Amino acid sequence: MQGKFDRGPVDFKSHIVAREGEVMAIATKNVVSVPLTKSILGAVETMTKCGFRRLPVTDAGTGKLRGIVTSGDIINFMGGGDKARLIEVKHGGNFLAAVNESVRTIMTQQPETVPETAKVDEAVEIILTKKIGGIPVTNAEGVLAGIITERDVMRALVSEKCDLSVEDVMSTGLRVTSPETPICMVTKEMTSHRFRRLPVVAEDVLFGIITTTDVMKYLGTGEIFRRLVTGDMAEVMGLPVRTLISGNQLMTTSPEKTVHDVARQMLDHGVGALPVIEDSRLIGLVTEFDLVKAFARK
Image 1: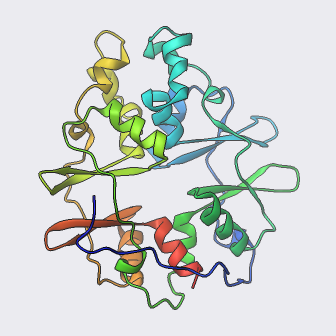
Image 2: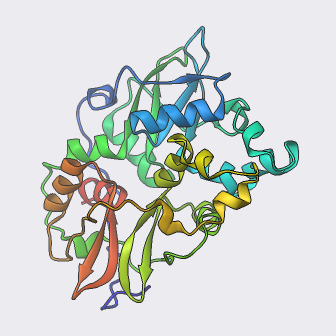
């Protein structure tokens, strides 16, 4: 979906300004994690309850990091990609049996990590080059010590001098979906393109945003079970995506806003992206990743 004008990407320099202080100064400590034996359903319930998009998986005894399960892994499992074979092949389409499998069957193994002695700029470089939203922090023995996310970095960098506007950093040429698109089609689109969110548009009007977290909550809140009659995932994943979109007022921004203003808006409201509206039309999307790149690569 093209914007009103042809806006090319901003040519950021590759250098990240070195910052004093170790990554643990801004990382989240006392991280919630789950053991390898935790069920998929149990892990999703934990993520939903705590409002997490990612959950480290550790050895119950040693605390060593063994993997990480993300909202992307969950939608992949629910029908978006290859992890859905656990339902379709191993359990013959029986979703109720599959969600009780161990979380180790769908987690991302050997995730990107940083040592607790790493500098902030090292973590930022991984976030920007690998395009991942959060990185576990481990000690010398591989024990989970914390986790650093795009939001943590954005909070730390929001005071940096930056003269860019939303128009300079936003993503354009967006892929969108419609309110009537089946949930299963949306999960496949998000998984294949590694999207965390898709704008939902009806007749050129922004209807809402669907995120991997919204789909994950479908399972984590138990709503999916209330709609499940036969036990076949097709009946609940074939519902229109509007089923999952919150009725809360959708926050948006405009292209002329400064990156500082929009960063503070996102931090204050705990959202990971804002649609950019101009003349009542969706012209782009600005995300935490876009803002981290704007603040870090000046």
